Length: 186
Image (cartoon, rainbow, N blue to C red; front, side, top):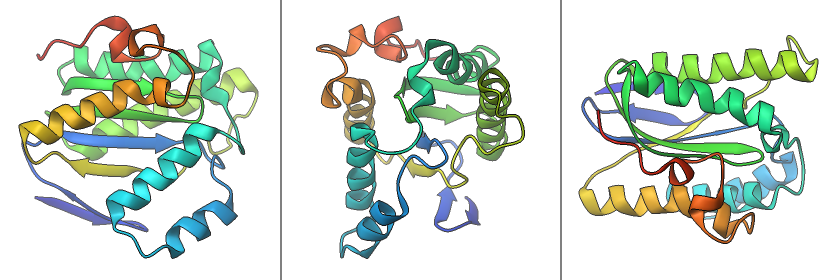
């Protein structure tokens, strides 16, 4: 099992499906981060509290709401699956964050570096922000422990645009696996 630490500890077991969340740099105010971090709740509840704030998109950049910029985030997700770097189970690109459910075939750090790096480079160039941070450094990751949790997380991802009141049905959100039809396992 791989382990690394930034602000949070990250355990990445081999051969397991991983739920990842990346958010745009500055998408949560420091006040919101301090408030949620101060709550006496477990890591899963903190994730949900942060995700609820991200869905509101009340502060910070919303660059992923621009179709061109969302496409820059979508391309390395779909291309990585095509190249066999991972099996893609679900994804959604929201205005200020994205969720991906995948099973790595290469080290996860390599997958996330490519996903985040390509999207950041291309999006920043299109936005005239070359050299500035695009993604928040820290990502959220959670390994899936059983089939029931896998299905719950897949639904959570695909329902995110509905929960955020961006569309009425998951398949109406252009920037998701639900819109394209569930990806086939490779």
